[in-house]
Every structure is written in structure tokens, then in C-alpha cells.
Length: 73
Image (cartoon, rainbow, N blue to C red; front, side, top):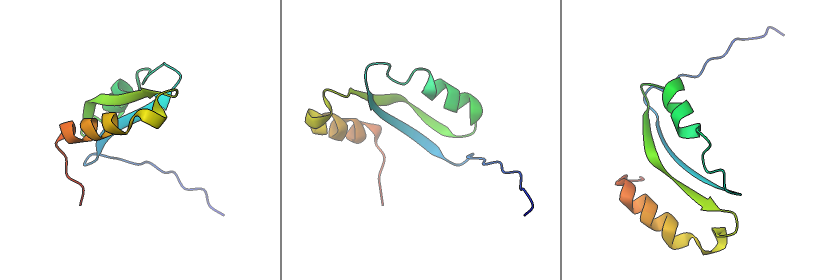
């Protein structure tokens, strides 16, 4: 089997990041994506929720998504 080189370009993509964890937030992830995909739309105000708050975070998630002003079809 021949090995193929693969490269994914996400020029027309958009990124809205949400994370849950133990407190490190995005640890530079948003900036890294913006550097690696300079033509993509990267929303810089990602949502980070502590793993201890996930069960009670529904309204935070809804408010965050509403604030992004995006529509899902």
C-alpha cells in the first residue's frame, strides 16, 4: 500500500472553541489555531468551563452561543 501525504487546509473554516477541564483553559490553543490557519475565522472569546461546573453550565453555554451571533442550519 502506498503511503499518501495529507495536508488539510481550513481556509474557509471557522473555529469557536469550548473546553471543560481542570483550570488551564485553552492554554494558547486559540492563538495556535489562528497562527496555523491564518485565513480561517477564529473566534477569540472561547468558552471555558471548569469540570466541576459542567453540570450547571447550560445557561452559560446558551448565553455564549447566543452572543456569538452565528446561525446553525
